[in-house]
Amino acid sequence: MTTAKNTAKDTIETMTTASNEAIKDGFEKSMKAVNDFSAFHKDTVDAVIASSTTAAKSIEELNAANLAFAKKSMEDSVAAAKSMAGAKSVQEVLEIQSDYAKSSLDAMMAEMNKNSDLMSNLVKDTFKPINDRFSAALELMQSQR
Image (cartoon, rainbow, N blue to C red; front, top):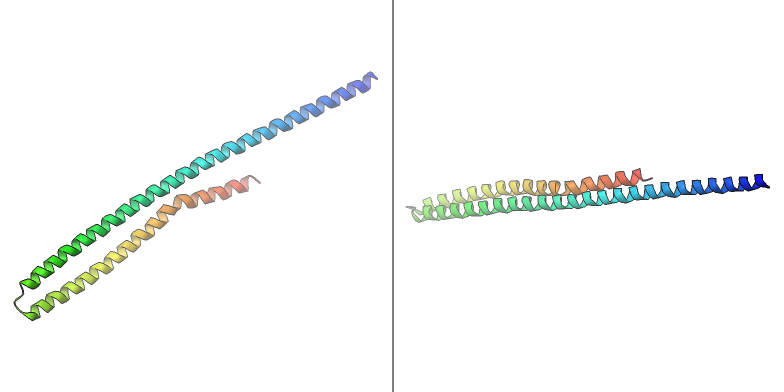
């Protein structure tokens, strides 16, 4: 009888110890997952902030370039108008106008290329932190399997 009692007691103690170990292990894994998620979330918020900051700086740069181009275009227009006003003949007016139109078109095409490059860099640089977070999310999901 005592042996059966001791066996039952040992069995219960073994089960209790195993249960406690399983609960402790599960709790530790859960806490690690919560900590990992919190760190991941913080990094994601940081990436969104970095992305927004980059976008704002790039848009500011684009606006500054557009304002500078508009100012130069206006100055060139005024200079061409003054030259035409001082022309001695209709032929000279036509030559000044033709030169102005050609230089304006060339400047506009160059500015469009510059803006295209700025926009391309804006998109690439703005979305890089977000793309990095998507990659990190995939890695995290794969590591949790």
